[in-house]
Image (tube, rainbow, N blue to C red; front, top):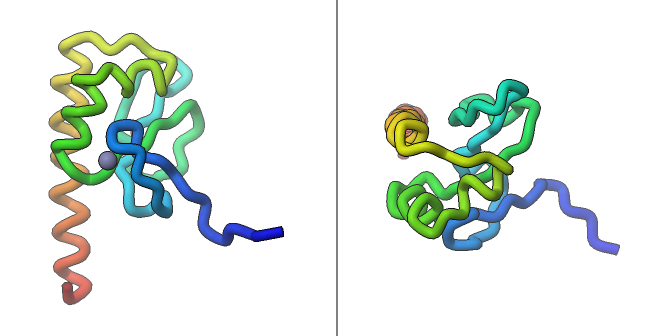
Length: 101
Ligand SMILES: [Zn+2]
């Protein structure tokens, strides 16, 4: 029996599978609000998306992100999440360039 050391996540947009650290995770908190989960550890129902705006747009455009989170996202929510998502990508790129890539 194969043991997976790294839990795999699947992008809700393109269905690519990879380790969870590669993804931006969205989480629905106890109040039903959806946020980008920067820690990757927030409790609640989560959905993973590649750190690529194209996947975010596909997840929204194909109406996959809301259902994955059991949440209905308003246009305001989508706008807010787009900004949080872009921030998360920008900061992870900054982090990887600091580590010498
Ligand atoms: Zn993807």
